[in-house]
Image (tube, rainbow, N blue to C red; front, side, top):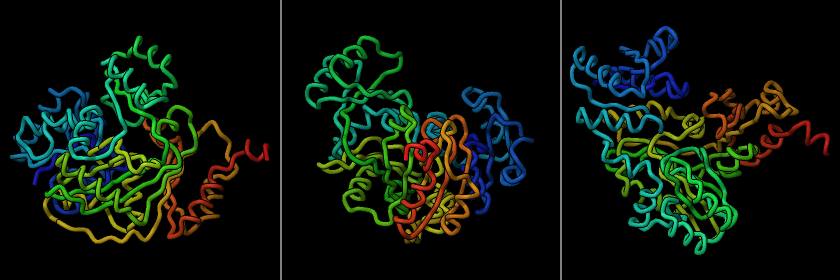
Length: 391
């Protein structure tokens, strides 16, 4: 089997997808911008061949790389990147070379928030009310109907980038009078907890692996206010979340791929926000491994290559992600955290610059069967010199 993988080196933790494919005997052909000698010996060993391009955003170069692989290895069976940024390139290659998966005609419904909202409504999924900012009449009507604040976000975007909170009609009118060049979507502000429905779907658009993560704050607050970020995995999936998640997978026809669905749990119940039909960001995929003592990277490889149709897992652990910021002075360094939480400590990583606004400058991952233990760790990890002085 010939499997083309875009940007196999980045983000670094996604290199395990290449490992998973290699371990089951798939010929992995990589296309990326990084010189081959900088890939590292492990990734070099997992790739059968690597084609360097000057710019992955130059589709002509990527197309020629694809043609090169076909001339050397025959028909390509699949292409993937597992990354939001390259979803359109993935889809265009599938379209041009008649491969399975989302095609160019699918991009609008899986990338644009306004189109997602309509699909949710047609599927009977409760949503946060919204309107396109370009439709001034609809935008002002949304403010009167839903009240304030409203959230303004790019209709085609990810990770709460360039997202704003509009507190009143005056701010809304000012925003509408000075619209950015990109199209924006307005949404009612929901008060509640951000929760996700994450996992891996099979050929029938049914989940064969499911996880859920809960957040101590919204990503918009993390990006705009640099608040401490802590999110953790649940050991049980609520029935209402599972039911809506399964309905969304069918509505978006999610087959043999990861999904990351975002909701707010409000006093009125769950409200769907966005459908991200790729592997979840930050270190969430690694957290899935730690929560279940499984190798989800290899499981994905087996599912996408029709080698597996089921997964055994039991969620024996809660897994927590803790993000710290460089401008703050914390009381406890890495070695102290490892000393105080020797059984729980799984991973520490300095995040890549491009992801830091939404994921923090440094990340710590811990696990425990007991949520109280992760909460104790939160108190220690986020303890700062400023708090000590104030206390």
